[in-house]
Image 1 (cartoon, rainbow, N blue to C red):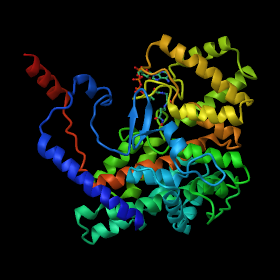
Image 2 (tube, rainbow, N blue to C red; image 1 turned 90 degrees about the vertical axis):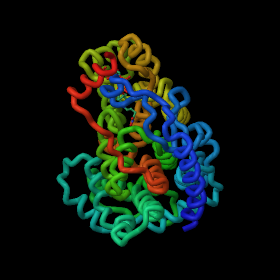
Image 3 (cartoon, rainbow, N blue to C red; image 1 turned 180 degrees about the vertical axis):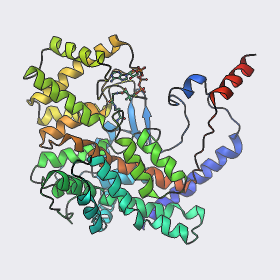
Image 4 (cartoon, protein in one colour; image 1 turned 45 degrees about the vertical axis):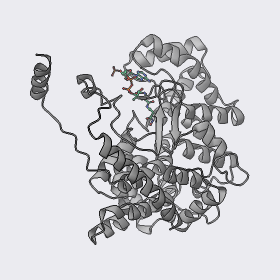
Length: 436
Ligand code: HAX
């Protein structure tokens, strides 16, 4: 309730702000749509508004105006840790202000109270075929929680539109709280001995994931979890997974329907699966050369990948035009803890060469690494060898940003999304009309 009270004050302010903008500037033009935009996935068009986070093409992601560097310094830390508490991150994403340590811990405490999974979710996961991709299991597990949605319950009982955000917040807290347990259940059922470890009542949210997969003895891994989830918490609202959730939620489908759909988008190789693909690609290189290749061998291998018509996983971005600060933060973590690992050395070699080759190749607008170019390497080094699981870890962190956006979407009554689609005939006629 305390979070709801804090949020309510902010919501009142933001509703007034939007009302003012719409009343005064409803017909103000802020951009143009060209034919090119229609055939390039609407890239480069400012078509959504969300204050939760913003990707600056040069400076990278900003959560509520704070860069990655600032966040890693300013957010309250877990005990004996250099990494942020996820509870503080969620407070920031939702409320828009840096939390005190007490506030960060209070969110963590709220999550701990509701972090356990209903028994039937694990039963359902166990019943799925063994070769099911963990992202399919993830999406299904989220969907299985839908029957508990407070939003749907209250909506069916006549809840009024200005109050939609309240049960949306409850659903969001519930889903985020349970996400580490969902991920750990998938991991234990798919790769381990099927036994589940219930969440601890002492660990913070990120460390609890490590605990539930029996890796809490590894302090580096716990730190990596905290870093990994913080870095993956959000990335604007236009990316495939966040936008999917926003779109589905605009039909007043609840948080569980929306986030399950979002995870299906995250599962794609051009989005969240790039971390799995990148690790596979790096391991293939080590297998082919027996150890780290020389720079000229590496260059040849990169060209071989490109000439096969494949992308270099972990490089490029639809918005960013510089090295992703999330890559840099992980590089620093790697240099500190695992600098002598062959796979990590390979990441550094790849970073030295790929941007030059991609520039020469001439297609990618951004030749620099994104978050996925290194995240799998750190996981792999820490013993998380099941790389088809990496996108689930991405989704665990991303659940914070996606749900914070959904709470705000309902608070600000984001309307049903319904772009008009036209036929090619109509398009050609419209072009002819304009140029004649
Ligand atoms: N390797 C080779 N070619 C690349 C490339 C890469 N890493 N990145 C872009 N290109 C190519 C594109 O395939 C495209 O080719 P076509 O014209 O033949 O279709 C061309 O360069 C222009 O693409 P772009 O405008 O620079 O990039 P997009 O906005 O279309 O796509 C992607 C952005 C991230 C999907 C793209 O850079 C890519 O496929 N990268 C590799 C996969 C990857 O790392 N994805 C994760 C991105 C971060 C993320 O969302 N994580 O979830």
